[in-house]
Amino acid sequence: MNYAYDVGALARKDLLLELRARDTLPAMLLFVVATFVVFHFALPAHSSQLAASGLLWVAIIFTALLGLGRAFVPEREQRTLDGLVLAPCDRSAIWLAKAIATFAFLAAAEVVALPVFALFFHGLHPATVGAVALADVGICAVGTFLGAMAVATRARDLLLPLLFLPLAIPVVVGGVGASVAGSPGRYLAFLALYDAVFGLLCWAAFEYVVTE
Amino acid sequence: MLTARKLGKRYGDKRVLRGVDLDVALGDLALVTGPNGSGKTTLLRICAGLALPTEGEIAVDVPRARVGYLAHEPLVYRELTAFENLDLYGRLYRVPERRERIGMLLERFGLWEVRHDRVASYSRGMTQRLALCRVLLHDPQLLVLDEPFTALDEAGAALLDAQLAELVGDRTLLVSTHDPDRIASLATVRLALA
Image (cartoon, rainbow over all chains, first blue to last red; front, side, top):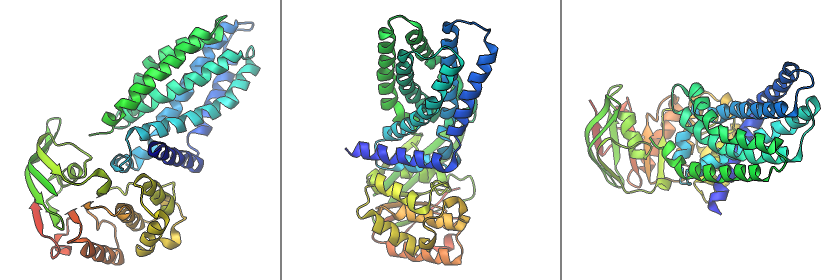
């Protein structure tokens, strides 16, 4: 109960900061819509749905990367991570709250992005929407963890994509599979397994990331 | 309360702290002095539990929830108001009667009238006052204060003088400063880093 209370207080803080600064969500929205416009003109006419599905997942991964890169900016610029680390709450609550806030921003961007994708390309299969929701959980869990690691380094802008993109490959495999396969069940299960395994690993290891 | 033996810290090849021995009992005010780069901040970060020593041993007989740490940076969010910042920390530290405690501290440090303004609009001195409110919010047993007089005007410094005098004897304080004369009369332990 106390853990949920801490996560709630920290996530509320992150949402409030975004509401005030408006740094992350507008950038993610513009990026993902602009990407679909570019893909719309880049793809040859009458191209297959398979190609469009692949591009959807590329856009989602890079939009998420944009949000993840901003996730720890307030803590870095104002050095507030020390204050949070010193607080008597479980340190994984910092990770979970940040992942929840990033999930909220990514989901909000996708609420606009998915209808735009459906409009520009060949509609949207319900399994794709499910896969996007499952993928978002894994992306935010892993990306937030790596964002906390990268923020402590000087090469943070370079390090996050270098660490994140290889770990996002299973998400792309599962997402594209669920979008194009006749029976997407096993791909959705694969994404759920990825979420569970990597979520647990990040939750357990976060304490070591923020300890000097 | 706090015991350190042959404490040292390295960052890669760079040694920033070497062979520090320190004994601080309940009610002491330990004054840490030294030139720039002598390791004052590193020592205080280790004592607060934010960094681990690479050499020696340290024992701090205070739970994390009862440590208050004032850093060079105020550790508050510029886009939140003073009240929102203290409310966040008050929730994380489970401060009883949180709102009353926040109100009392803001009043004492002269920030009550601007409690709903964003910290980004504060002067450096006002931000330092807010940082002091944050440190005192959960009534810590061990206060680790790194250059607490930084950016404070004369009125703010006098407020802090009075606060420190009130705490000495009842709480344990570890204070680093470039102006040791200011609190020399309160100090019971002195540590000069070279």
